[in-house]
Image 1 (cartoon, rainbow, N blue to C red):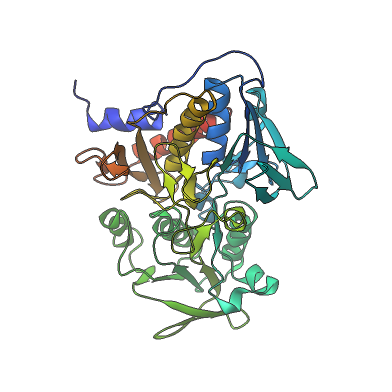
Image 2: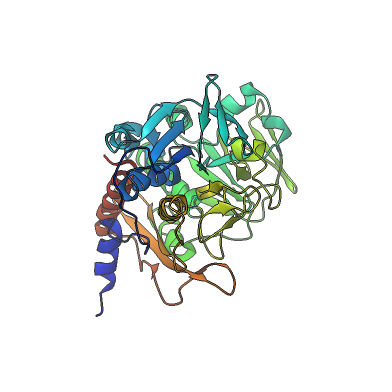
Length: 424
């Protein structure tokens, strides 16, 4: 059977492409073990929901500090004035309807010996298997951004929510003719094409509302890391003259009061500064001793997503040391959740886990308020390398950004929110 590229894109945006895993179906409630999930993002939410679907006798508790889920994918559109943050916000009620016990609190400590999670509110949760899906936090490598005052002036907006809204307000308040300076960290970071999509969204806003303004992109990397040709179609096309892209721009410090970025080769001043610091796995992973790669990431067994540092704990999503050519994306985090859910359901029953997981990634980038392009890939387990590897010839990239793909992008977003959280 053969499928056209358009059919493949529709398949991805409709959410039909699930991890090739065998689910488990049993009966009862709570008799199959206790699983605690830390983090209610794409990875944690998916794990909790699919455990309830595939192993309904397992009691699942999800710990999440935020009242609602706010999607990082599509959040750059808020900066461009092309959507509102409310359109990216999803309730956790869908998980509750699936029988997940959602606890709004923060995990502050893990005791692997006692199999306990201690919460900031003072309570303790017992588990048989623990899932840690904490997303990212930032390395403390920028002295000028250590104070709360500096962090309020120079935003990262790399976790969707209040900072996204605050950065949008800074752009709105900026004078026409002002300069937006955006610094990108060295890869790996969350969402490889995300910074370049952000540039497009801000350029789209400036073109409409502040046509005399400029964007200076200071990229630590030697070149655009994802979808280069596609982004340049916009940068050299409708946004020509708005964007000054400077690769190999290593950041040394930030002068928040003087609104200046200090680079190894000089300084750049702007009216609005947006600095995304280098990433590492989220704080709870660090506290629990799960970080064991480059003092930044967590290595895992890709058959189960179980930590190689601490047995009985599964680490998912952006916190992991990525497999070869595997991006840190919402789509991948969702797929990690399915691998973990299937493995945990089997392990709790004393059964063998799947030896042949196959997962997929799809990532859309919106270049304005209506048009998008995509990149897709398929990854399968290689027993010899003991990791997931990209399937040669599978997936690909768009030839150009189109409004049709913009429609698919929103379809993908709404469907993955439903898939991960049980509702939209």
